Each structure stands twice: as C-alpha cells, then as structure tokens.
Image 1 (cartoon, one colour):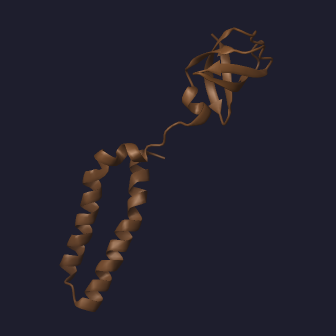
Image 2: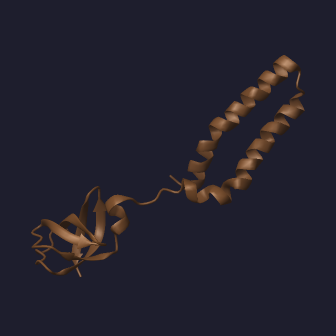
Image 3: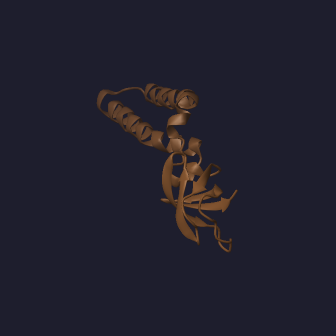
Length: 124
C-alpha cells in the first residue's frame, strides 16, 4: 500500500468524528452549516498540509531478514541447501537459491532475499 494512501486512511476516522461533531453542534446548538463545513475543511486541509512532515512515520520499513537484502556475509559451514551465514554482525539461518550448487563454509555470500527469519543467499 502506498504511503499516501496509508496516511489518508488513518485520517478518515478523525474526519468522520469531526463531521459527526459538527452535525451534532448544528442540530443541538444551531451552528450554521457553513461554519460546520468550514471546520471540517480546516481539519482536512491541516492533514493535507502536514503530510510532507509526517510521511516518514507512515512508511513501511523492511524489517527482519528483508532489511538485509543486498548485504554481504560469510557462510558458517556448508550450505547444502540450508545452513548458517554471518551477515551484518549476526548469525542467520540461510539457504541457497533453488538449483544452486552448495556453498562451502567460509565462502563470501550475498543476500538475495529475506523471508521471515531465513535468508536466501548466493555465492559472491
């Protein structure tokens, strides 16, 4: 999901609450409709203006194994097809790419994919 979409979906409940509150104030206190719509418009405009400043807070960042894609490491024992690699100061469970030959221990590897807690690596 795009960051912009994600941001505005999080704003919709606030807009709905503002609209309900404005409608209640119109019904109970006789608040003019144009004032209620202006208040709603200001709330929406505020969210539009703040988006560039808050965008990073709504971005989904890679976590776990996915953040290691592209990094290099060292095989800790033979990967045939599974084993362990040392990447970015951490020991990770790893496997070779489908159909790839075994990777000997001590060989340099490159992370090509991260899935949950397992890295897929290729010999570098």
